Image 1: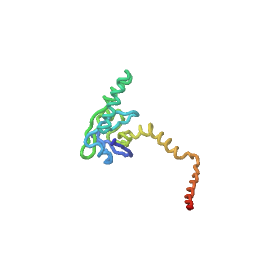
Image 2: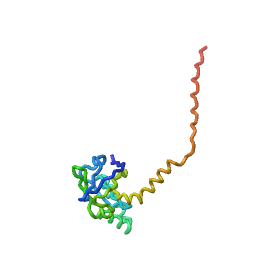
Image 3: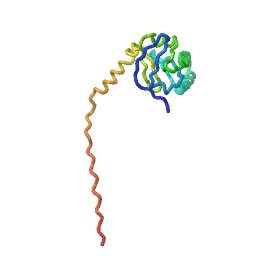
Image 4: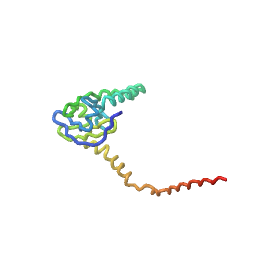
Length: 165
């Protein structure tokens, strides 16, 4: 079964550039994971299985032309394997912290994002994701059509057997 991640957590990046992976996520990773640059300046943390799927996507992408090949290159060079220690911490390399604008001894968001975990600078998240949260909430505020229940027809009475001759 494919991993599924959901929920939102806030942890600090320690002085060594490590973050604690929430316990609810750890079991799906074991002791290793893959970390990559991801659109909108966040980092994606992948299980081995999901990272292999991403590799297939990137391999196919690079066959589509120069621009796509360069995107695959950028993705590959911005990805790395990371270890998860017994306390559930993973070290984020400096070049990935720079990409995602994660600062040592500052909070970061650790969000479940279905097939991956995303690591965000809270300010970047507020700029790039918060507007979608508002639109999502608005969908619940808009009155939809009023549905009136359709009466269920009563079952027809069972036929009475005819008496014989």
